[in-house]
Image (cartoon, rainbow over all chains, first blue to last red; front, side, top):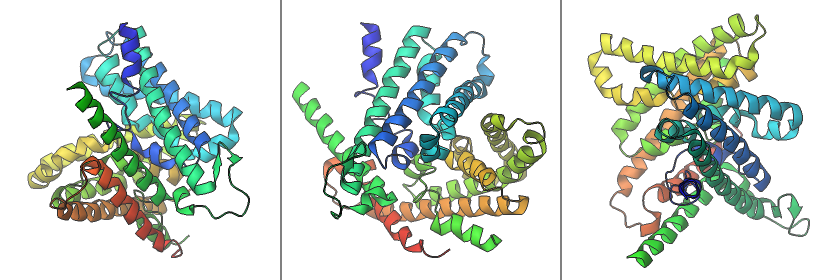
Length: 201
Length: 190
């Protein structure tokens, strides 16, 4: 029951992207298509689960004063693993996501969960919490990526939806499209949660 | 590439915040007032220039000769954290007034992905030492410019009648989109 709560918290109530507004750089940068969004989400989820579990395991060993550098080293290790594995097995994806794979190190979600949750809770709960947060991040990226791909390129996960030669909203694939889509999505999420609150009260 | 081209490219054409999406968290967090935006921008620029020099030396004198480029990520983030700490101590000692103005922003800079991002990019483009420092300066000034522009608009926006769900980050992102559209106009410059 506790584990279930840990898992679903990241999906909506404390969704890192829409509710906490942290870790937004990759959300904007890699979501030119749905598949890029999914891949970035999965990579970040892997780092989150592994680093949360390991930090929780080491929480009694790491001295309090140097905990932040220690956490960063743990996170950087897993990011390097993801970076090298992707470079070897998924070179195309690696070149598209490029800089934003090493930048998972400074994604505030990972460090934030380490500090706020993994440092205080058991290994299993920390891993589940990391998984929930990661999945919450992944669905946000996938949603944004899908909207931008459908409107900007007229396709969904690479499958064309419109006839060749149709004019699409090219701006959605460019940087301004990312900002504007996320702004509108944030407003929609606020509306949905305001409605939920009204129902409860 | 000439130094001027690198500077203008990092400052305007490929603006770190509005075109490359680096450093979005401080961009959204500290762009509510112009004064704090300037403080944050200058502190970041300062750290970027210092980090540029340090990471270049580490990459080409330690990591490459020893065959350890896979440690780049770890080495750079430690260097940045150390540099931020060093800058903090230095300012505290030499200029207490400046320290008070920048103080609260300094610890936040470590997790600004623009800094790690530009350090890695500098290595990928195999810039020389001077080029890396200029690249850092351009990136930092570009970050400051975006932050100050945004803060100016948000200050005026305080009295505007914005639809309720859009208030806060929602409208800020749409504004950033419009700014980014404007910066798109620089695309042909370099």
